[in-house]
Image (cartoon, rainbow, N blue to C red):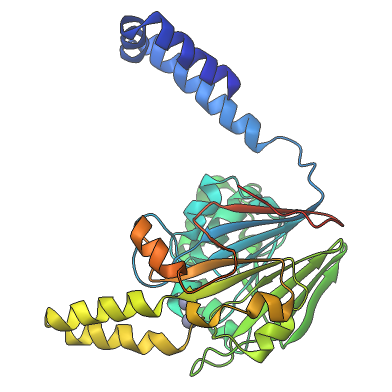
Amino acid sequence: MKKLVAIIVAMGLLGAGAYAALMNSRSGQDFLLEQAIQTQVAAALKPYDFVGLEVMVCGSSSPLPDPTRAQACIMVRAGDQMFLIDSGSGSNTVLQANGAPYQLMRGLLLTHFHSDHISGIGDMNLASWVAGRPEPMLVMGPQGVEKVVAGYNMAFELDRGYRTLHHGENLMPAALGVIQARTIEPGVIHNAGGLKITAFEVDHSPIKPAFGYRFDYLGRSVVVSGDTVVSKGLERAATDADLLLTDALSHKLIHSLARAATLAGADKRAQVLRDVLDYHVDTRNLDGLAARSNIRQVALYHLVPPTRNAIMEKIFTRDIATNVVMTHDGMRFWLPANSDEIRVN
Ligand SMILES: [Zn+2]
Ligand SMILES: [Zn+2]
């Protein structure tokens, strides 16, 4: 990257004429292309020397559309184990654009089966298959996960055949393209290599069951709420957590959107908006959660609605007195082992 910046700075010094010469000649274009690609690939293949929990927001939005955000998705990496929580539309693009280590993927954990949590499963399966994950993609979730996975396997059966036919069994082994499902119950669902994952029930009524997940690794902990209201179950599961990623809803913003829809005569849209008010974490109820559960840092994702400018963001967070992080796609949290530190970038 430094090399590329130096070239651009040098071009700036040389002036517009030299810049135009590079941009408009085949050899100049090829030179810039090679530099950019080599820099990116080298960065992606750099040895991983971080010890601790790494979290990436691979989807910060909800069903309400936002062209700059994918739907629900969180990546958690602990050493050579990578897990994904939910797979909303567009999340695979965020993962690939931000260099997610798909080859290390150990499982996809579904919180529940609303479309904004499952619609990217086909893309994730293909991307991790191409990246060389050594086992079939394992999708875990509450009762119902087998049905979702069976549907995806059926829908992508022809596509799987094309991939193996085109690239060969060696490169795209047919058996690794078929998704595996595992129904889980609340409790510890994974305990290996120092990483413990615990599933817990949340309150997304009338959607049942709905889970959240807690990750504990080398003295650090991350909790992903899934879709829920603030509940005793969430508070218990998040006790002493370093980082809680929680879904979040702004009552004021949704109410204003619903009223605007009513005034414009879009009654169905207005009713759908009012219906979502009672099954997400209302930001007015967030205050005190961090203190009650002794959570070091709360971060908001699955934004309902996704904030698209500074004024929306101000309104979204104005009822929360404690410090919270509003996430965006590609945002990473780094929790070094056995420390109190949380780095965000
Ligand atoms: Zn939901
Ligand atoms: Zn959702």
